[in-house]
Image (cartoon, one colour):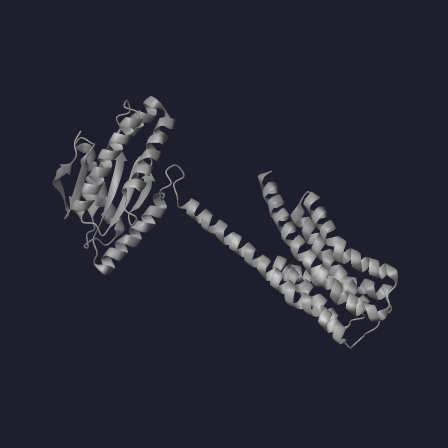
Length: 360
């Protein structure tokens, strides 16, 4: 059912785009074909068919596709009818070179834009069928000269229709690009907090590690754990736990610099990259975050008594991989938790500092 709904939306979008291009193209084509047909003195029914094809068929085709069970397939059928009628008018014009070439090339351009080589070949087959029917209806003949009037009648179609089709294709490509960027952002974002997810944050960590290594820069990373988070879920429910997670995500966005990169590492664990920041300054920044978050959480619900344990590690040039940097922060976080929680612990120079910021 969901797949059918997606195809329906895709088909309706295609039908709307083609309604615009078909309306313009056939109206301009009326000038081209009409100028070629006029010297031949066709009977009234031919003029009536020409007017129907140019002025009524675009709207009939749109309604036909819009009301179809699968609009996408219906619009492909409409395009083949367009190609068939184009071939019919080529034969009716007795193969007058410029109007015929204009008609065939505009049809081919439209089919390539919609369905590539496969649909181009299908459209050419429909055009050949239309030419065959036209040869049966009209006496086979060939009119080699193109009059100045016919030349000028073809110019609007040659100039305006490619411009309109190019604009439609550009708008479609632009919209698809926006959707692609939105999907990429969603695939790299944690839906609950709006921060980077685990994989996206580790990608940024690798980039920062290589930057520090190549430019001989310093930086710090922090791993943040919400103390006794399981107890919050067990006592107050997962809804309350989600509120705490969102609050921490909000606190990170409000307290970090624009250059800092926050993420949700998984579960109740968060992570931060602090570029070009010495470890001491990073510890002060994380201590400020810990105090503010505890205060905000207490204001929201005093019974929760939420606190943070934070492990910090400075960039170490001797490390060969970014995961070693992360391991340092993880060890510091373990020290913060095993040392009583609700504190900031730093890891530096290959050994744990015995000092910790904050206390229970």
